[in-house]
Length: 162
Length: 134
Image (cartoon, rainbow over all chains, first blue to last red; front, side, top):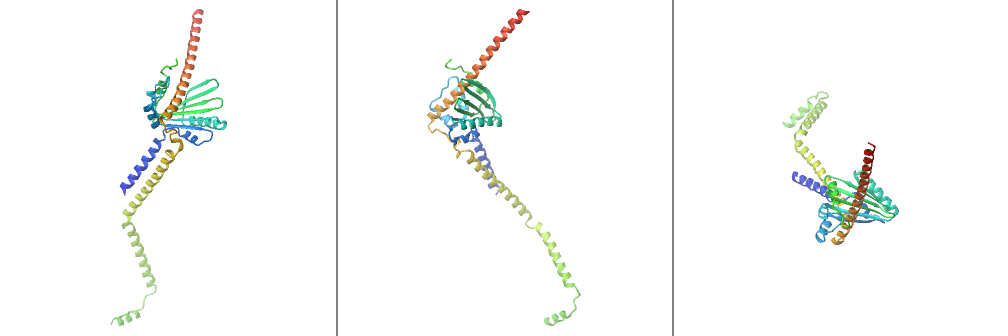
């Protein structure tokens, strides 16, 4: 009886923990996968790994060999619908407030507003980039195990265009 | 012989209220024997079984919660399923997203650098003017 109960408890604990571990992304943004007028893209860690093995992506000004292994998920949410745009902006404001993100950068360029936020967690960190154009709002969330120094390292390499 | 004895016994006068007192005494003995017997007999096993039952109930509750969370948070949710099956398309999308991040980070850094340069220039002019005044 004792053995059975202890096994049940262990199994329950493992299942609960794995359910949290599987959530390698910004949870609050998941609901936009089903929302009308919103495009939702999710790229998992496994897919990032496969993509890296098949054809190593290259981004000017970014050391991909350092960046890619640290990523555990990418979420891209975009919309050109007025009400959906308002919801997306409010959602980001809510996440920033609740999960204590810090503003990394604010760029206003040619009528386009870009806000980059960083959340450094013990087990998982996240970068949220909110882009507000005239009609379109895009949220890109990068989750992974990285620190502020890693983010700095991303921009230390001079751009190829320079 | 026996019949006679019984008849004789029946003839003996019974003191008033004896029957009630005896039945009351019997009830009293019965009650005390019950109160003693209850803790002695299945007490240990009963309590043990009770606690194990409670533990089993807690374990099943945790298991149900675990299963619920597992299915609520992971594979059944659309937001956690890969959008692309083809790694090449996923790679292109990831590249595009990272490109946007790099561009904006570099843009921000460029603006920061420009402000820094202007600040340094202003400081130099101010220093020159101060030395002239001296």
